[in-house]
Length: 120
Image: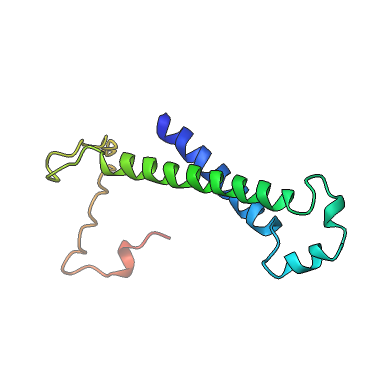
């Protein structure tokens, strides 16, 4: 149960991390913001959005790293089966009884005709 919860947090953190990385500006975009390209009128100001996105990305990266370590722990600590003979046996399906055998056809008599035995 806890493994499913960690996996869910891991997937959400990965998706959010991808989104935040795509939202961030490259290093060359800072020059345009310095000359008044409209970034200073945003919610966080010219440099505020970069700090907020960078910190949020760092926190999500830490969550992603920790959930990766947690999932690795759970995979590594599963009970190991050392032999095939010790593995739990799966329920074998019941085999239906064989169908009633048909009567074998007797070979034709020595002196008889083969066409005589064929029904019309």
